[in-house]
Amino acid sequence: MADDKISLNMFQALIGVLALTVISCQELVVTHAPDYVSFHQQDSGKLESSDVPDIIASTLGLNTQSANGFKGISHNSLFKKPKANVLISIVTEKQASPINLKSLARFPLKNDLFGVSMENVMNSLQQTFLDQDPLMLDMIKDSNLFDMQTENQLFRKLPNSIRKVKDRLFDSDSILRKLTQGSLNMTLDSDATLMSELQMIDDIIKTLSKNEKSKKSKSPDLLSFTITGVNQVADKHGVQSDKVTDAKNMVTEFINHATGEFKKLYKDNVVVEVLTLNPGKGQVRKARSLLAVTTPSPEPKKSNLNLADDYDENFPAIFNMVLWLMIVLAIAVYVIVYGMWFMDPGRDSIIYRMTSQRLKKE
Image (cartoon, rainbow, N blue to C red; front, side):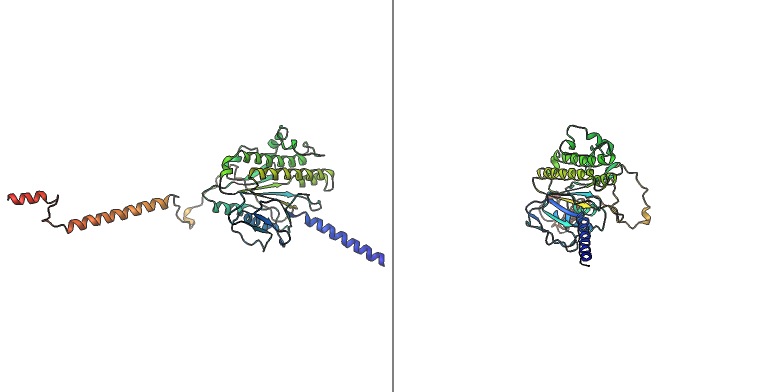
């Protein structure tokens, strides 16, 4: 009987460990933050994946909702805000072990939404810095293409297909020269997908480092990347395979490299987070590419829409100029009319000088 109780307790403990392992695979890891932004792991409370955009917006000083009472972040300066926020999302299998990352804080996640949509954060950032054109990018692999949500022309020259990025892997400056491949083989689609995603992110970092305009701008940058290659390697070779272990080691090595590059790029004034999520069948982010050429849809009839009149952006300035010009002209006309109406005919003025001389002659 005692042996049965011991076996039962061991079984329950094993189930608990497995459950914690699965839960720990879904987490938000802060790999870097400036000294004036603090993350408090012990005060975090429950955190859902849908709250991540609000947390990211909070790091940039944007007004957001409370993110379900999240108290894991605090700003130590009223005058300093991060120049950029970088989010790297990694899709992993539920049974996979957590990715070992150097971190300032870790927040376990409840996966209520697969993927994180940055659209609301981008809209808020654009409205706050409307006249400064903030740099925003959201990248995810969609089938055989890289879907990049951005309005910045800076990234148009980058390859947008897996095939083109695979060719970059053979160059002398490819990311593979800096990372350990292990048992991964770029001739396999699953392995090559992971390498291509890392290469694409590295090319974006290099492009940003050459952009002096972005470095000097006062508006913060918002960058989001999604890595799905680890999950594809697990689907192809098995969750417990050596290739999955090598894939995670490569991703860990790359994130450490990318964090260092972002720190150098933004002079330590950047927040870098890594979000690990499990694939799910729930709500999925529907991405759209702002770099792709879209076919214009037919415009609806204006008579059926209750729309306000569209004014030019210079309308307020032009309206003020015309308004005050009319006021000045009206005052000038009033003064002239008033003076002429009450003018004394006997006064020796220019207007009546000829008239007075004629009166004397007559």
